[in-house]
Length: 293
Image (tube, rainbow, N blue to C red; front, side, top):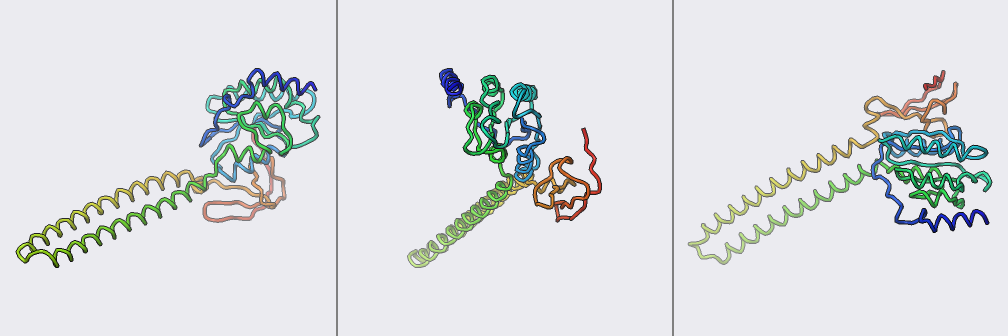
């Protein structure tokens, strides 16, 4: 009853109004994450982001997500991220659990901290059926932490597919336009040969030849221009590809289970792992782990 009364009061204040919701950035580069550093939610967010776009920088603001002091810890983590100027969006994440474990996300102080945060906030707390007041205050609710990461970070590989589809479409249209113009010139020539008086045939043929040269020149200018624009677009899209990152000497580390290991803390001595590089993969064994920071 207290929770429902609080929800009605916050709704009356307009904290959950749709017009307050801010759109997510289309190409985020720095994403803040408020969650427990030892929970499954943090690992899920890292795995999804590494798969969709390894260039995105994740900034963890560690916090308690249940129990005594969780509300103050979550608010402090949010306030800390709010001091970063080059931050695009924030994810608040926590795995599922009983309703009493999610109590911190129904606290009025945390709800107001989310509402006043200067950047868009995505709330991925609990399972699909868990809905908290923090979900209503956030700019976007996600059913799980993994879905929150998918909503925030676009899949960079789709740009390459779109570029290839556009290239094929323009090449087809250019070829069809060229064939159509050549066909029209041929039809006009045959018409002249059948109907024009002999005295005008030479002059008309000369005009037709000139028209054909103009068509050929126009097509020769059109095709390189469009090809140059497409090559420029393709180079920009290729620069966004995760493979470019691997080509500069970086590698993606996957565990034996196929999941990405985005930090040294996720590796264990003696564990089998696989390195995904620009031109292939390599199976390795972890002989030691050295954590930084």
